[in-house]
Each structure stands twice: as structure tokens, then as C-alpha cells.
Image (cartoon, rainbow, N blue to C red; front, side, top):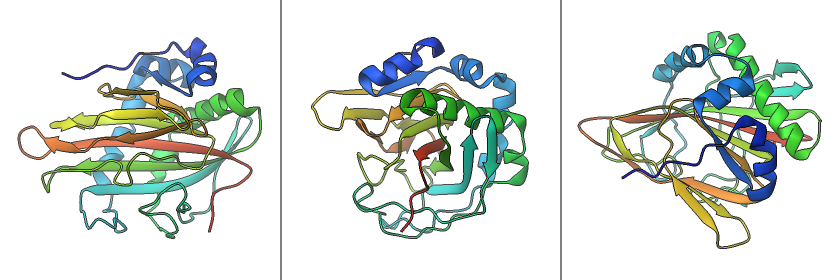
Length: 242
């Protein structure tokens, strides 16, 4: 039986993030926050079918496909940055930290859509409410985890922080799989929650300084399945770099 997350109304989001370090918005809450329709968000989904393999998996797996692009949000201005490598320190990613990873950029027709711009601007407003208004250095990752090899691992590095200020994990699609349970824990205490995101364009929002998170492996229900997510991280001052 899948455990459903508690859904937060958008108006209560800043308070709940400050109180417990995480919150989940349903698809309608995301639409309200971003000022777009669910149909507009669903139009973004097609590009997940064209993700190249992740060539950096140190566990030898072939279950992950991804693209990555960077942006800067400053007030209502959002600009895409020149393509750059993704880098994390070992402190935050014990498996892939310290590696300069060049992923293919997101497709131009995806990032040109108004719904994409409004979605990232909405995440910047959430970060403003959490940390104060300032420019935000945004990394966006498209992921597809598949079960072609029998099992797929959304977070092969295990429970982790990302070394940023705000993390947003959007569920884009979940087809023909079991597992993929989300687990959120206090970074400095024993408390934790677990639940499974099932509705497309629901989102888990995390105050990265206060909580760690992971998703459990997925397995096929009947034949091959996959789980698509969009992970957006926002960091003050600068992108992470080697």
C-alpha cells in the first residue's frame, strides 16, 4: 500500500518549510504557485522521452538518463547560463562527488516554453521567502530512471543533501513501476517521514540545510517501466564548482 504525502496549500508553504524543512504541493498547488495550467506543464513532459544515458554512474548501472542546464533568477528575470558541468563535493555526494560531470543540455524548445520560465520563477520566489530576496543560481536536472535491467535507483548515493538552499523534486511521470518511495529525515535528529509521490507535477520542496532525502529503488510491475522527475536546486551566491 502506497503512503500518500500530506499536501500543503500554497499559502501555507513558507510557514511549513520554516517549521519542518520540507513540504509537498499537489499539481494544482504547483499550478497556482507558477501561474500556469496543468495542461501547460504536461506539454513539457514529451522531452523526457529523449534523454541520453548518464555515463557517470559509478555503480556500473545503465538505468539512468538525464539532461542538465543552469539558470539565474533575479527578481522576475530568468536567464539561461552558458552550459556548464555539474559538480558536487564529496561532503554531499559520497558516490559521485568530486567528479566534473558534463551532461547534455536541456532541449531548446523545452526551456523556451512560458510554463518552464514560470515554474523556475516560482521556485525562486519560494527560495526568496525562505532565505530572503536575492539572485538564485539554479541547476535543473531531467531524470528518467528505468527498469530495463530489473531495478533502477533514483538516488544511488543514498540519503543525502545537495549543498544548496532549496531543492524541488517534481514527479513528472510514473509508469509500470513499484517502489520509488521518498524518505525525508532531519539532518541533525531522528525524525523522518516516508511517502510516495504518484501525481504528475506534484513536488517535494526541501530546505537543504535542515533535511536529508532519498528515494528507494524501483522495480517493474509488468515488463519495463520508468519514473521521470525534474530536480531543481537553488543556491545563493554562486553555482557549486570544483
